[in-house]
Image (cartoon, rainbow, N blue to C red; front, side):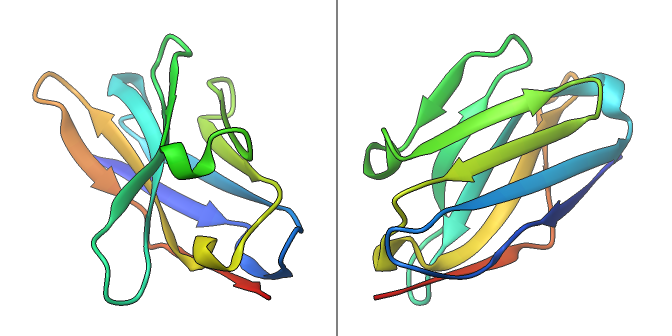
Length: 117
């Protein structure tokens, strides 16, 4: 089992920045990919960014050049630095980790990010 706890959401004006953090506990030795998804009201959950255990990253086209994902394996933490935020970035952001032989997905509780225009 892996537990994920997020922090760092909030309200920010358009053009501003926020940094999300997600710390893993439990069976951390088995964690492979870690990433962030988001879900806006009335929309499906979508991938924002992901980082592999080797440090390779992948971003949604809508956030490329504005968001940066990073991972500190010594702290079992993944970060999402969000710059140049837009109102359309408003959503609940969920931390995600895939773990173990069967690539089981684990989710955090979500943190609200609201960008005002």
